[in-house]
Length: 347
Image (cartoon, rainbow, N blue to C red):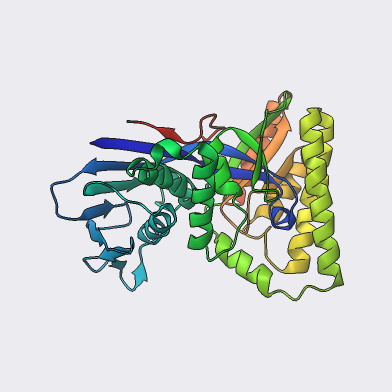
């Protein structure tokens, strides 16, 4: 027996932080995929291999359904993140494979080939989606598990992995593919969107990794004074306005809504001390504004990736000027685009 599943990464276009307060987020799947493969093994236990492991990790499933690792499964003094996520997904799926399996967790497409640094496209959420599908397929419940339930299982496992912090938009995007609007309530609502005509985009990478979990912890610790509450309310309103404009599909209105949203996100970041526009994002916003474009960080910000929105008929000189100024700030354009296909079985 051998089968595999894959799921794409994501970029959040609007609604970061506001989605935690019930506002809609817009996110798109990105054409880099996490792939999980399971195949029968002659070993007397299960095994896991991932890019972060120098050797395979072996485990057995005990009578309570939990994982008992047979080897030291730590990278130095720190747990290997892929294995930690694997254990959370296994627990949430309540996996019951009928035979011993060898699992390969492949997230190589989420790393920059030049620097070997991880790109900020949500490798763990894509991995959670693909792994959930594979583990469900390996057990007796596959036929009775619809896509919506798979999404719920993957979101819950990924939230556990992140210490209960996050919205689930990243996993929902990995499951759905394409472009979606996502709201935490009711019940992680997902709505498919279309990319508007007249608007182009490029994804930019700061070259500096950032931690979503660390920023969410910082947000949680922040004493919410009146200014912070006001900034959060304005961000929620701006998030709703972006979705409204997007649905109406008028480029001018979308650009205006994105400009207002980016300004609201900047104010939110300042009032909450989360540094969304650090690592050069603020300077790149100003460069885009000078040229009539809109640039914003994606997700938690403070590094990782951002996106520039520009008219499809933008002048080549302006595009080149933006690229020069981005390079001076240490940013690089990534050759990544929207991925229409979400979770898929490959074998």
